[in-house]
Image (cartoon, rainbow, N blue to C red):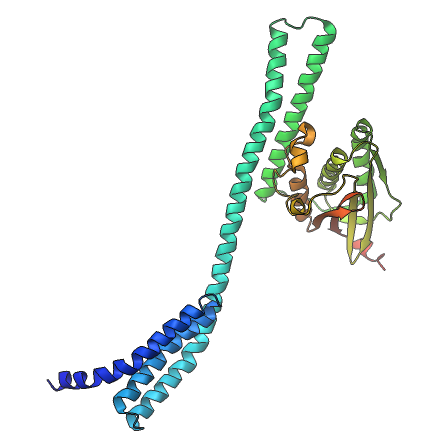
Length: 343
């Protein structure tokens, strides 16, 4: 009965002074809801401590006695320990929350990219397959009998088959890159040798589209990399540049070294890329509106493959508008023996 009487007498004072402090803390948390998580946790820790102290002050009638002194010392000690811990925990939780949001955003972007890839690849596969099927049926049914027409149909079937084969090869290469299964054998690779090989392969396409393809007078460095993969990167960049350069335009390759890295640039005359598309040109299966209207534009995998292979070489690849077109620049580590020649 004495305990109940004491609680009945003390409770109104304790609640009367601690409740406003608790409500003030709740309001402060609401105001700071968009601030850092560490700040919110600090307020969350201090609010019950201050509410407890306010309740004790109300119960003791603001009389500074041994009980009040003990409570103040305890609350101060608890605050000294818990506030730094709250700040550290808040920062850790905030970092984890940011990481989780970024991970979810990456997953959503990857899923959207996969859906886009499946849609576009399905369309790009369906078109040549339909043509091959129609021409094969025409040959089988005897609709085409003249030797010249039969040869023309066979030539078209072969061209479409090679196009399908190239798309399948690109898909396989991209799957290896995204799965982290690319294993490179690094060695000293002279860029001039790689460029000469790639230019020789791309020259017929450039002549067919009436595009001038040339290499600038440059100091061609020696890089640390894998010859086949570097050739694949430059082939993809050249093919992309030639395909988007209008007739009587030019595509120029140049190279050099600076800041301990080698650089290779492919400049075209495509007229530039809209700023909103520059950030997406290396995305899987992304093609600009102009490319989507061009049946020869490919499946939009070349630049994504180039980026993956460059990253596997511990390098970087960028794109920006330059002069009459755009510039794709690849930066690669120099071969150890070539570093000494840097200024």
